[in-house]
Length: 71
Length: 559
Image 1 (cartoon, one colour):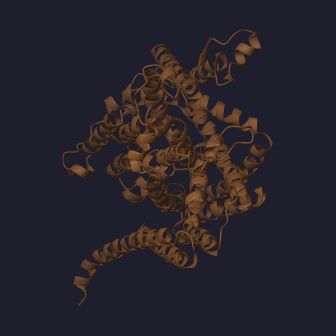
Image 2 (cartoon, helix red, strand yellow):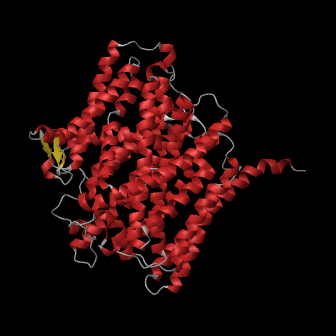
């Protein structure tokens, strides 16, 4: 199901990447707690990127046997 | 305690809503049969099922309630994890899941039908269906109250927004959508609250600072003072705790409640089904860091004279349930505040969706297909499943309004359902591990266990609760417990023992089924799985043992 419709890791990855961008924006626009927002934003960005990469890696791995058959 | 949110906070909440609905929308085209909608086509990957397994339990009661208990009882609260949940989850994976999954039952009540008979299934299915709707409604009610207090939204607006979103993604994507969203919610809750723990620990001087502040109390111990109910904040002793919580209540919930068991039953194969609760137990034993430690930090902050305080309740005293929201308000700046609030909203919605999806499966398969319309087309059952989802949400909304109008009615109903649930584990335990247990034994065991639970509550008191039978008879209660928690543990123990004994006695005197009919349903009549060919991390016994060892180590470290 995961391969046919969507990979949940990529959904989670995108979600946390978007939230991290919002937190990084907040770190520049809020006076108090900019450091906390920035630190959490970067952490979320890294987590989101890892989840997305895992999804991409898994997708490429699944495609590889087909690729070898391609003339 | 109204929060001052800005645009970024609202954008975080909006992003979350878009994603949960988006997951439902994308999964919509996969929902072609009733099995897809109600059972996820038994194709959920194990890592997804494991996280959904914990997340289905990571509702509002867990997130807000455990922080509240952390502030009240300190590390004693970890018994719900290190004594209760972890070992029960391992037991489910190793011993019980082969029967749930191997019997091809689509639900826990259906297993009861296969093992015992239709009347036992009917009793369990109907009480479970009603209970899930009330639980979902209570979750919705609590969310609306929280949003009213924190955002100033009206009660009805909060109910409408939350119910439309949960309806949207459960109606579109069925159980798969609920499970996928539970995983997203799990990460959001953990990563949304983790910064609070980090910031809070910095403010109180780390773990050493907490130890210094709480010196002289036993709040940072797990077993110290458990020899007597009067020497620990839980108000119960080690015996009641181990049997009542660690065995009856924990095993009863984690091993027989379809809401959580369903997450393991929808995996691809029996090994995945077994490993789902065992892998789920690994993050579970670390969850106290996220849900209990904030409560302890709040307690230390108040003791050390910071400007933080737990909000006061209307009737006087601290409103411990507001511990976590008040910490978010105190420490989080705008931006992160939106994340923290979204994590709380996610926990409520996760609890509500979990209940609704368990309800629609049990209603469709165990009530509608079994008693109302047998032998209809699969499309018909798919349509019924979808209609039941809408009904479940509508009934939850009605329940939320009922809870608002009649607070005592909800307490009463929760109490009654507690009585019904308490003996259930004895029925399953005997059914799976004793081939002589009969259908009549199970049914009358359940009824007598429920009555024993009610009688124990009616004849004893704790914190002013219970004792209603004594009151009616004009006599003194038989016993007064030190705490409601202690009373609950003992009610569960009495119900379990009564159900066990009555099932055993009635089974000895009633006709049992042929052994050939019980193959795959009873331990001694089922061929044992050969797990030697699995690598160690796919072996339920090896990973389960490691989880139990880790749990024992935690108990020793924090003795």
